[in-house]
Image (tube, rainbow, N blue to C red; front, side):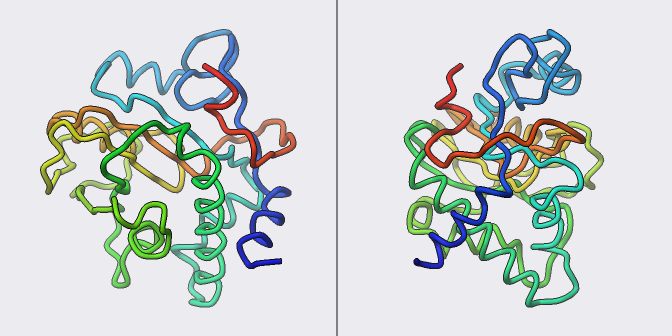
Length: 229
C-alpha cells in the first residue's frame, strides 16, 4: 500500500462527513441549526456583506472538539516538535490530495488556488503554502499567495485588514483554509478578493469546527457538494 493510500485509509476513522443541506443545516458552513437556513454566525455575515462572501464553502470534514482531526489541525503548524509537525503536515497533504483527486470537479472551474493568510508570522512559512504550491500536482501550477493580513484572529469579519497583492480581476479563486470556526478569516479573505475583482470564490476547508455532533461514517467517494444543494 502506498503512503497516500495508507493516509487515506487511516483517515476514514478520523474524518466526519458534513451533513447535507437541509432544514436544520446551515447552507454555508454545514453546522446544524434549529430550522434556520443559516447558522447565527453565517447569517450575520450574510446580513452585512451578502454577495461579497464566498460563493460556496465546502468542508471536507466536520472537526468535532476533542477529536483526532482537531488535534492534527492544532499541531501541524504549532507543535514544538518538528517531527510531529512534519508527520501531521504529511497527513493533511494526503487528505487534500485524496479529496482533490476525487472532487476537484465538484468545486467548479478555478484559475487560481490560494490560502487564507495566517495572522501569525512564521519563520518557516505556512505549511499549506508548501503543500499546495509545491507538493500537490493538482494545485501546483495554479497556486499563488495573493493575500496577506495585518489583523489578529478576532473571529470577526475584517476585510479591510486583508490586502490582495495580485491581479485577480475576473479570476475564479479556490481559497483554502485548514479550519473554519467562525468563518471570519475565510470570509474576510473572500470579501477582499471580490472587492479586487474576483469573479468567483469557493472556500475549501479541511475541518469545520463544531463542539459536538454525530461522527458518522466518512466516505472518500462523497463530498459536501455531492450530497446536493
